[in-house]
Length: 295
Image 1 (tube, rainbow, N blue to C red):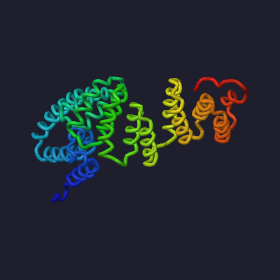
Image 2 (tube, one colour):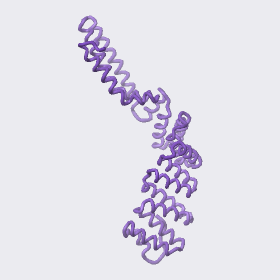
Image 3 (tube, rainbow, N blue to C red):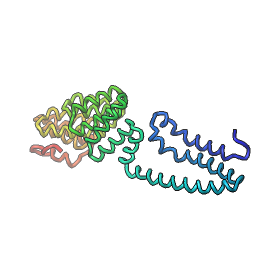
Image 4 (tube, rainbow, N blue to C red):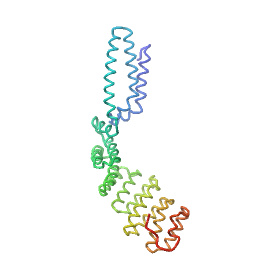
């Protein structure tokens, strides 16, 4: 119990416990190195207890008060030195993550470090950390998903597909995972499987308008290779995903015209104008002659 006349003791403990509670789950999850950054506010409660306890002791014995002043000065100097040292770990994200790993290695920190490295274009280093994250937590889908995305960026579509399938098995209802799986199929040139995965991603909550330009661009690449029938399927999907995407409408019309299906091309042009209005791009198809290359 808190003795009468010592309200600071109750106030300090209450401060510590109440401000620590929102972050207690981090400690329970075994992420002590991460939890350390959330102790600043709770430690104010401990400081309240210590300061008032020393003050009470000093009032009772002036000699102890002088000792307390000296000790307090030494403690402040020590804390100042430790603070300067700690600040060095926060100079940038990479330094912070590497320090956290040195204190307590975890898949969570490895994944965050890999994300930072990917943003800097350091893909090989990011692979090392993501593989470590997968080894530590093989049942957590984000690590597999991020590794699949990384392999896609590295031009290793088969490995991307393998990791995407693992992530999909662990999180079958996650739209981001479905998108990653679709991208892996796209990288391998399995367009039916890719479109099926894109459709599934949209059903799970993906924004179809963000996927349409990617599908359209892939169609353009196929069209330039002369694979116009495969490109047509992609252009139609892009138009279905985003009826306002002018480039996809243009490319579909051009693709149909290139295949010699003028009636289908005219029908696609009418649908394009109905969906987006009479855009300047469509003027290419209003008169005689061959349409220019896809956008």
